[in-house]
Structure formats: structure tokens, C-alpha cells
Image (cartoon, rainbow, N blue to C red; front, side, top):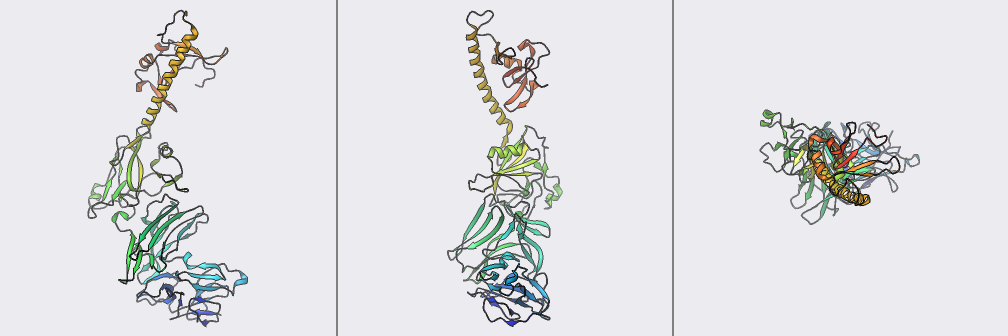
Amino acid sequence: MFLLSVCTSLDNLVPGESISTDQTLISSSGTFALGFFSPGNSKKFFLGIWYNTIPKTPKVWVANREIPLDSPGVLTLSGDGNLVVLDGMTKNLVIWSSNASVPASAMNATTAVLMDSGNLQLKLEEDILWQSFDHPSHTLLPSVKLSLNKITGQQARLTSWAALDDPQHGMFSLGIDPKVQRQLITWKANATYWRSAVYFDKESKTFFRNQSGGFFYVAYSFDANEIYFTFGVSDSSVKLRAVLSPTGQFNLLLWTERSKTWFEAWGEPINKCDYYARCGPYGACDKNGDPLSSQCKCLKGFRTEFQKQWATGDWPGGCVREKALTCDKGEGFSKFEKMKLPDHAIILGNMRTSECEFECLRNCSCTAYAYSNATEEGTIKCLTWFGDLTDLVENHGLGQTMYIRVHRSDQGGKGHVHKLSLVITLVSATAGLLTILFGYLLWKKTLRNEGRGSTGGSKSEAISNVSVGGGKNGTELPLFSLRSIVASTNNFSEANKLGEGGFGPVYKVTLPLCALNSSTLIVLHHIFCIFLNNVPNFPS
């Protein structure tokens, strides 16, 4: 049995006090009010917080969304120290509770305070045991966080109202993506409805200026234990709220005192390209395109298999590759700029650009990568994607440069193809020139050691034997002129190519060059002629 008295204080509740119909808590500055309300033509009652001085004020927080009251309820502090909403008829049935962990010694010492920020706090002296800012409903106020605890997995999300006059849970929710933790997601039921850009940086802030000259910002932060999205203002008198509407719109609204209206400073989704996966896999939506046209197109090297559907404005089937990838040296990456990075990114962490490209290229399932040149500590450098690329948007305001895996002949319209074979060729050519120089110097030294009187030898002779092993097991390595090598490999033809190693291509040479018996295996590693018959324990 709860014994209650009417609350006489303005902004707080103490044990034994309560508020009910037509009674409110008012924050000390008079900005916010807390009390029971019945929205629109509804006959249900809810406990909520709203702006106290704005006409037709919107509600910014609702407590008992899951269990509406059929009559005005009672808000009080229970015997265990928690805030509770009681059924207005019996005053014994608990409809809603803050469910805070209150020490047994403090069960009759807690207080509830409505702060000037709109935050309802349950306190034990100066310690905050529970606060409404940690449990947002459908609205964010400045300093309220959409958060994800990376240790526990606990999230703070927004959930839309069911309708404009129904605070019960609606179809839409908004929060940080638990799979790709550097992006926001709006879900319609369990399906993705809208997705933000991917945030590379450890922290990101976007600033706006209002008509009075003050600033407000939207911020995203990523640290070891928690990720959160929030916003703030430079002037506490500025009234700013972000709302997830019953239709799935997420809008940042600013109160303008002159016109007595809420001004929309930012919102998503607005453009048709903002809706998730509008153009299907490998289909790109052009945000600068004609909004009355399709806006969807296939990237170069891709085509749609659903021409009839696309002609009628049905694009979710997306695009497929014109040429299948075979995971060989004929593949590379086409560069695309100002792209909203696709969904399902895999974070590889901090590495150089070449390392990021190599990690993707060596995995046949990797279809794209993106790299950030930011130098801030904690900034991720390399993102990769595996499988189909979904939710691609061109000319996006927060777009990044990305590289999509393509066949050699499919060069992206805005970029170029990076070919690993080109890198190998340059490395091999450099190694070749150095080897020629080394061989020439070694040849000159050998001739000097043999003396001018040696029989059967001349400075123009093609072959000279050099012992490189030492002792009786020394291995004889012959040296060849470049002209003879070119002739013996048929000018380094593909037919003579055996494969590639870490230092370049490996070629087969014909036996007449080396005049050895048929049991000898001779290969040329770029321009190295290696005889394996005299090398002990050489693996087959």
C-alpha cells in the first residue's frame, strides 16, 4: 500500500510525495515540464516530458509506452527507492519503474529531479542512479546519446511513435549498427530502411550556425568501450531536438522564436537515393540525378538482368558483372570518388594504401576496398567488402573514394584500374637491370682471375663458370650474355614462362644455350640461369 501526499515542490520529488492529474514538475528555469498527458483524441494516459513554454508542445520523452493507462496515473518514489508509475484507480499496481539498483541503505533517501536540460534523474545525494537521457524514447535532446557499449552490447536507440497521437512503439527504430559499428541505421521492423555514411574518424563533428549566430553540432565518437552519436549547442537557450517520426524520418529541428515554428535543419531520408539499397547490388543511385528519372545505373563493367523491371522503376534486382572474375593477374581496382561506401564493411584497421589494396587483391572474395588518409589517432585506415556491394550512392555529401574489383578491361568511368601485373613488371624490370649489372661485374672479375693467357677464352665469350659454394661441394653457376638469354627464352615469351615468384617471372630456357644433358632442369628467374643438377638436396 503506497501512502502518498501531493507534491508541493517545483522540480523534484522526495519520498512520500507524488504527482497525478494536472500536476507537474517544472525544471528550475521553466524550460521543461513532467506530468501525465493524453495525446490527441486518445483516451490513454502517459507520463512524459515536454517543453513548458512552447504552444502545442511536442513531447520529448515518454515513460510507460508499453502499458498505457486507462486513467491518469500517479508518479512517486517506491519503497525500494525507484521512480514508479502507479495505476490511478488502485494506486497499488506498478505500471512502470526506473528499475535502478538502489543500495538497501538508501531506499528511503532517493530523490527525483527534472533538470533544465530535460533530463529526469533519480539521485542519491549527488550520485545519479538512473536518468531518462540513458533511455531515450523517440526524441534526442542535446547531450542525449544513441550509444552502443562494445563490451556488453547494450544499446540506446530511438523508437518512433505508432502514430502522431499514439506514443506506443511504432514500426521504426534508429541506432548504431551492431555489425558495422561506424554507421547509423534506421530499421523498419527488422529490415534496414536507411543507413548513414560510414565514419572513418575516431570523432566527427559537423557544425551549423543558427539565425542568432549560435552554433550547434552533430557528433559521432568511437572509443575502446563505447560508440555514440549525439549533438549539442553553444547556447543552452537554443531549443533543438532530433526526432524519429512515425514514418521513419529522422529530423533535426530548431525552434525559431521569431516565427514560432520548428525549422528543419537536417533530415534523413529525403532524397530517393537515401532509401536503403534502392538500386540493388552493384547498382548506383546518383544523388545529383533527375529526381523524376530512375537515378539508378549499373557501374561500368556491370549490367542489369532485369531490363523490364528497371524500365518501370523497379530496381532492387540490381546489376551483375558482364565478365566473371577469375582471380588472376587480369584483375584490378577501378577508382570511384564521392561514393557513399556500401553496407557490410569489414574493418582491417590501420595500414598503408598499398597494404590495404594487397590484402583485398590476394583474397578472391574481396570485391572492394576504401582507404582513409586521415592522420588522427584512432582513425581506421582500411575498409574492405566481400560479396555483393549494396547501397551504393554517387555524389554523396559524405562520400569517400573507393576501389571496386573489376576485370582488366572494365575501367571505371571516374577512375582507373590498378593492375598488380604493372607493379610486378616494374619491380621485375628493376631487378633485371640490377642483375645485368651484377653479372657484368662478376664476369669481368672472373676474366681477370683467369688471366690473359687462358686458352679457349675471350672477352666476348658467352659462358664463364663461377664457384659459389666453396670447398669440394662448391656449385658451379654459369653466366650468360643478355643476347643469348633473350634468344634462349624466345624474347621472354609467354610460352617459355613457368610462373612468377616474389622477385618476378620465371622462364624456361632451351638446352642448346647451356649445352647440358637432358636430365638437367634449367629455368630462368627473370634473367637468372640456374642449374639444379649440381645443387644438393634441391626439392623436386
